[in-house]
Length: 422
Image 1 (cartoon, rainbow, N blue to C red):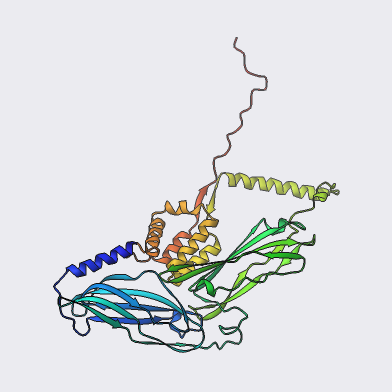
Image 2: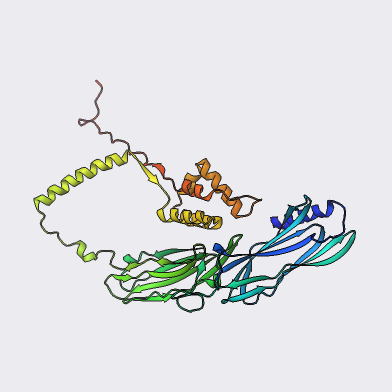
């Protein structure tokens, strides 16, 4: 809504500024530029950004963009159109229009994206006139996959081309604590940058001997950012062991094509153990066997040393720091200059470590960097992204945390009771 009113204000400024003039060649131009991650020839189902830019040196009364059919492509417009002012080579000011469209080719081949048409109602030397401004056609070759296995044309494994892929795995309760015929719920969230929700893989197959799984619903969502869509798929299972023994559940690998490095990579749903995490209650009451005096002596010395260590820790300080996996995610987003991905990684980190935001807010440099990141990601004004690499290093620093006040020393009453006054 803010951008809409800003565009109206710019249009009003153009309408009221300067006298009407006749249209000359070069006053109305519309260009379309294709951007491929890694500046390489894209594969099928890989995101390509089409940047539309119109420069109009005239007074515009009404406008409407007509988009070509985009046959053989899936597509999504990234945000609203933007309007502003730009300076021409001759020093004159002109109105600037911008739009970004993400397209995904269905298969390999050489495609031609037909012209976009911008219908403008203009003031041409005092007369109201409608003109059609057309872009040039864009040729977009889409490469065929030449890898030994996989690729966008085969059904297995699922082809996932993205800037980054992350996985969150959660269980309720912990799978090692459940026993035969009890149930634990597993939820896996797969997040991919530069992919529409329809491009995310189907629910992975989770199967092993000794357990029964019940598939839950799959939830898909797409968040549109200026850098492209960010999509999430949430997979859910109810898991029930059918045998009393511990059951190993293997990791599940999800291959994906890194559109930045142009290499195949793997994301992994981690391996877990079902059952076997708690001792049987019958074993708790059994008497223990005899213990040798050597073991008793060793235990005594160990306890004495541990007590001294605890005394030192109790009077010292502990450290609070961003987990290693989250530090790695921030560095990866910073190296790709991906501000929305950096912001998403922060969201995941603060959900798992809710004590960190207060520490960052108390650090002036970290607080300033986070504020700049918010303004840039959410389009407040023309805010530029902060130095993501420096911000990642700042947020990854450990914080010293007080261990807390010690309990007051107990005061012993006099052995013989209170002294009586003579």
